[in-house]
Image (tube, rainbow, N blue to C red; front, side):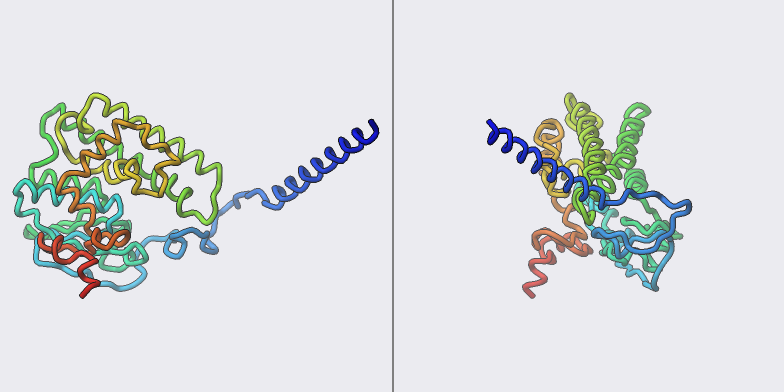
Amino acid sequence: MKIVNLLGFQDCFVLLVLIQEKQMKMSEKKPYFPPQIWKWETANGGKFSKINRPTAGSTHDQILPIGKHPLQLYSQGTPNGVKVTILLEELLEIGKVDAEYDAWLIRINGMQFGSGFVEINPNSKIPALVDHSGVEQIRIFESGAILMYLAEKFDAFLPTDSKERPEVLSWLFWQMGSAPFLGGGFGHFYAYAPEKFEYPIDRYAMETKRQLDVLDQNLQDRTYICGENYNIADMAIWPWYGQLVLGRLYNAAEFLDVKSYKNVCRWADMIKARPAVKRGRIVNKTSGRLELQLRERHNASDFDERTQDKLEVK
């Protein structure tokens, strides 16, 4: 009986030591108390720490190239960039020949702070478009604004009906307001932050799944986001949420259980099969399979002749 009691005491002692060690490790991480005035002192880690800064404006001189077409796109093949190249390819697909464009690569490794790019987008974010078709050139930045501009310019993929148009614009702006929680929130803390932190990952995973559920319920009795017609709302939402459920963003498909959003998955599969989407999603792309990288696009033939797998062979 004494031996049993002794063993019980030893077990309790070992358990107590383990608890104390855990508490000591937890106490080593000091709580953060924000200063009265925040100051930028050092890079805070993460994938984009070397280019993030709290100021605007250019950091170096850079003249942007100009191609032969009236529409000049400066971008990278991120979800926001892909929105625009999908629309441009869709316009060409339906015969809008004046939608031909040059797509120049602006790597988000600091190129976005070049003087030429800052001149057309003071916010230093891709994509940015310059239209040279008129007497004076027109600059358009922010992907949603570019989608609206092109849809109105070519009278396509944005209805004029007093009931349908507000529905499309509502979903377009839903995407513009929602995606930062997916990209800058969930994507950053899940894939790019220097460490895995439970609180922000849980917080943004919850919001991302809520957004997926919003889409899933909306698509329950609709073929496309706004009904039976494909439009710029689909083109804005698919590069983020469509590619997320297709397993192309953040390697997070299993973590977010994306297969449970069956309506979104059905819609995403349908959009990805469109020829214009297949082309648009590889323009200005710099990662992944080489045959799916068309880093610059100047002619329709570039898709067959100038993908990265062919250029590197040369």
